Image (tube, rainbow, N blue to C red; front, side, top):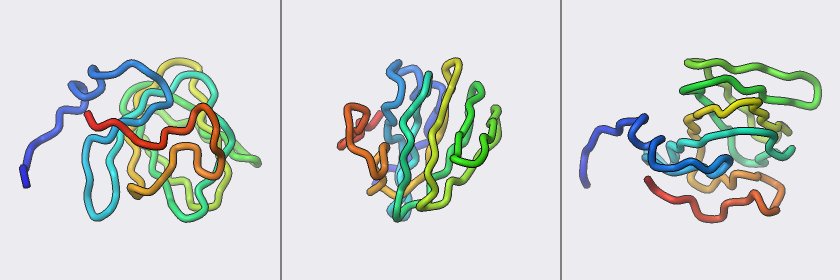
Length: 121
């Protein structure tokens, strides 16, 4: 096992695509992921997993069926399992995600945005 520090900016510089999380670490069955968002994602939910979204750069809205929460740099939000949500970013935003390794990015929906296997950077 190798113990190394992770430079978030360096890892973010390795990819440009939106809505395609990259794994940068693991702990206790959870994955730490980096993602870039721009535009609208799909409405979805995760039946068995909570998700944490931590904003590194930029701003985005997390839409719920009954409200919208705007997240800014250095803010995070935990979406409880079973809650339908949709991230929307008017401009590019960089986010750190913390969730179980089994979490599918599109939750209960499978479509062209679904990422079955995540790249490690």
